[in-house]
Length: 118
Image (cartoon, rainbow, N blue to C red):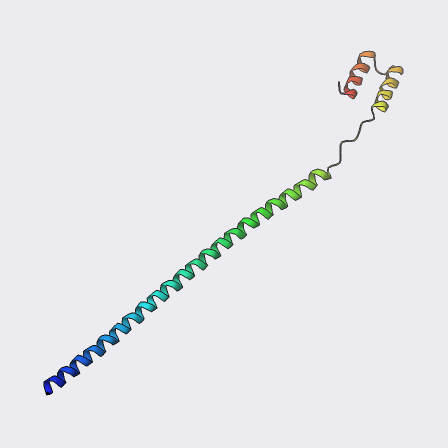
């Protein structure tokens, strides 16, 4: 009977140790799975932050381009238009110069063509 009792104690102890080892292994597996999940979430968060930083950079470039366009547009609009030429007044001046004898017919015709854009 003593041998049977010893065997029972050994078997019971072995069962207890085996159960403890199984629980320990299961706990380690759960910890490994949780760590992998945490790492995956951290990687996803870093990827999202990188995408947001890249989008912010693109947005800044677009804003800079729009600002440059806006700055260029008023500069072009701010230039005063070429002074309008009063054709009648110019032709009258040329006629007066011709009548005074300061220019001849050929010069008058050339200057008239220039004024009229011909």
